[in-house]
Amino acid sequence: MMRVQTRKVYLSLLLCFAGSLGGFCTAQEGAAQESGQDSSEATLNKIVNSVNAAPGERVRALIDLSRRYQDKGFKRKALPLLEEAQRYSSQVSPLGQQEISIAMGSLLYDLGSYAEALNILLPVLEATSAEVSGMRVSVLNELGMVYGALNNTSESASFFAEGVTTAGKLTDQLFQAKLLANQSRVLISVAKLDNLFASLSQLHAVLDQLPASRAKAELLISAANLYRSAYWYFDFSADWMMRGYANLIEAGDIARQNRDTRLLSYARGYLARLYEDDKSYSEALAISREAAFHANSIQSYESAYLWEWQIGRIQNSLGERENAVTSYQQAIETLEHVR
Image (cartoon, rainbow, N blue to C red; front, side, top):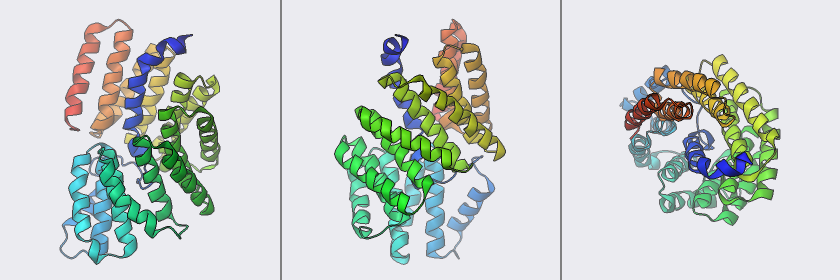
């Protein structure tokens, strides 16, 4: 009964939360970075600013930097980096040109510029039509996302299906899991329940076979949120919620082992959300504060504002109105860093 009554209340919040994980699910994403300017990022900036860098090396660095900004929520900062990479496209190999196009298509999707994304991605699809390659899987994933956003579910499903099959031929289970997670997100948005159950079941099975890694932790977090959506909106069994708990605990353990503070913040924050769902407000508040602390310690504002707002929501549920208002105001101030 509670799930039916609260479904409308949680709908907009869950969609917002799903959007915040978009950076975890792009097929071309890199591993989450622990700090805003770690040694790898400093190295990339050095390459970009070097007059002696070869075109291919510079393009690779520009793409990697843009993805890091994109993952952190600074999408507008990522755009000029990819535009610079495009200016070097005539000086790199066809594979390099395709990688630039896929990176730009992914960013345009994130920015909501779907027609522009299609204009860039479809030529890559045609160029890789005879291939069984990671590049082919990448463009299929991005096109599945774009057509899903355009509510063209038949095209979206077709691209995802081919992507999952192609990744299977490459024996790349990580790629398969990414495609299945993105496919499931589209199916949730259009309430394709039969297909959704099959997609989530396959995702769960593939995740079980993956070795521990940062990339797996990101997917565990994404999957946990998908399981939660399936439970709340579509009356999936409570087993899916238990899988969500298990995913987030495992993701947190992996993040700690890798000393990945940003990833730990997401694992703890979304775990707190499950406790909040269960009305275990004391536990939810403590874990949310931990998540916000981790995010703010590395200036990961795109996640910090989520947990600060979540803290306010939990405080409001506890009847702590003044504290809730303070937390909401803090979240709004934090969000200004992302805009």
